[in-house]
Length: 617
Image (cartoon, rainbow, N blue to C red; front, side, top):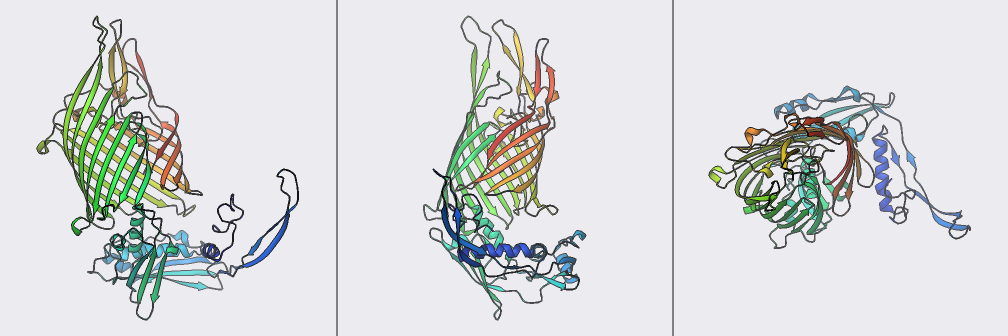
């Protein structure tokens, strides 16, 4: 029970100790579902019995005294019925043949299901798995007939077992007669319809409806749409269905927190968006994010459904300032980079799960490098070298996102026929997957991610700021720059001698993998045990003529960490806050002789606390 919980803390302040018919119906459905998912398919929940109750109480406020408290006593009659177990779960030959015709693979039904308690939810999940393989991926595809899947359970009252058969439905599908949205005040009906692939006149497709509702939730302008917000009225005579969806708008304006621990130190900022200010369904956005070592300001304008297509076009102006100070070395190299530019991204939604994006960026970077000299009679001990590089970059990417599985590739090129002084190739890829735990609890999940990033110069010098100074955003527990190798730096002291030290050199090739076991807790919190592994390389052939003197024993070292992370979704802004504790089980720990009098101890910390805003993956 979640709506009526007088035993929970602060129940009276949250209205959880009051009885209402609507609140009880929500809890009644949860209780019934619990019984039906744990072996009692014939369970019944009766009408509640409410009675007045008066009981004495002895509060100790100021002095102990007796007080009579009046309340309600709620009794819920439950008839569980007989306990059933699965005897067998099979799929028909016609269903397997229909899946094969679409080029799919049949759903694997593990033998461990036999003997387990009967579960309505498990059967429904299995039915939907078959449904996704039978139905066309594109709801607008009329070349193949729409096929429905139904589960046919057969109960044996003597042995208290159930046999379930998955088969194609013999009945013609229900057609959508009308889709109606309620609760709209600021958003148009057309805005919602364009994001839901289910159309009037098409067969009722639960999967298409869920994909559209999830797409609406990701916009951030609506509260999550639950099952009780969807009402479907079936007409058996005409085989039609009317769907009513009640939405609750958050507003056309939205502010969210951003930041975390990136490759150039910790940052904290705010992003503010305004939708449909000009009555053209456009999105105006502003972003300010900064920290001790970086600052980013960005203004953007995006328009979805450009020229009546599924493509969107955006325009953004950005201003980035970087001034890194690596904690592992107090002797440089120090530099400041100021990057301003304009970006024009174009995105096309190829299907419900695939999107293609192309962008063109024009920017100008100004970098100041500080070089230290030995003291002289003139008093000059340092000098600044300033470089200005213009960049024109063309990038393209592809993303496949099903909600539980994500695959993304992107590549970009700058210079050459595009012009500008930066000639760099960049490429990255990421694969992530979430799998529900089939053994311990369906509410828990395994999450996996693999990622790589590479950058190199094909002509001329690769700017220092273009390298990857990765840390705990790839492998939790590392400081900025520790995932890559170290380079040898020198400095002249007052005596005229030269001292040597080491500093993070960054990397131009990064590869990592992450694994998590996620356990949902209460009130929007989640716990996760994780294991991260990754490595960074600096390949000199990709840098151009300017190549640092690397400490080869630190290049390509495998780093790994394990720990626990707690996440809490901040109410209102709906942004997860992450706090973790990591043990660096695979870490760099060695001493390197730099000269006859200098030894550098390359050591990652054994453990670390960290934090971040937003999901890691």
